[in-house]
Amino acid sequence: MGSGAAPGVPSIAGGWGACNPNNPKNIRRRAGTYLESAGTKVLIDTSPDIRMQLLDNAICRVDGVLYTHGHADHLHGIDDLRDLNRLSGQPLDIYANKETAEAIQERFPYLVVEKNQVNNPMFRPSMIINTIAEGQDFFIKNLKIMPIALNGHPVHSTGYIFNDGEIVYIADCRAISEEGLAMIQKRPKILVLPLTTLTGQGTHMGLDKLLEYVNIIKPHHTIINHMATECDYDAVNALTPPDVTPAYDNMVIDI
Ligand SMILES: [Zn+2]
Image 1 (cartoon, rainbow, N blue to C red):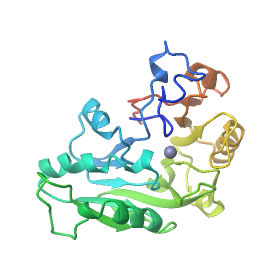
Image 2: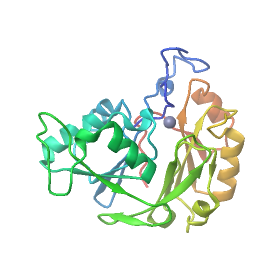
Image 3: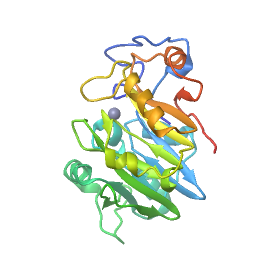
Image 4: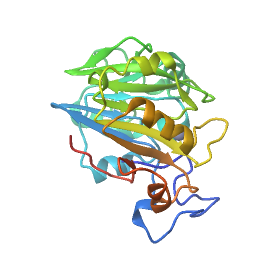
């Protein structure tokens, strides 16, 4: 639902950067993904753009929210989940590694509830925090989820393997941990990798490293996500093989 890095494209400070403003695929909201599998519906991250993302895709009920890390571009739309509580009348289960769970508890203490407790949605959302550990799988309904450690981001970032490797979702990082790579047990139908800038920086991998992971993991298809103003859609597409495709906002993949 959102394919952009933290400032979005265009950005307030940088405008369109290298991106062609005439290509609608270059208009990028911040990171947000919706996954539906055999009736199980999950969100990955809630950016400040989550409200429009949910409206665009007519999503108003989910079974859980997976957080990758606590940076604002992935978390700070959490207040807008209040309307999901309003519809369901229930608290919503959210899942995060220990550092991210602590960040949510510290920044948004008013929305954290215990099981069977729900706030009045007139005033605040209701989220049950489930702290997850990398290497220990869990289920949301019938969807099997393995969180894996990602390395080299300033805060602790978690990737997710769904159904033993059918889909692999990697968030902001410099590198995927060796233990995490070893937990991909089948050839993924879809691998999502983050880019940010073509050359990479201290906190994000660049295109060379991204393509190395494509060669190591060998998915059927790779989606490049989380692109900043340095990444023009057509330019990135021209630099990558046919089975590696840049994401765009509200892209739908049916497998
Ligand atoms: Zn980010």
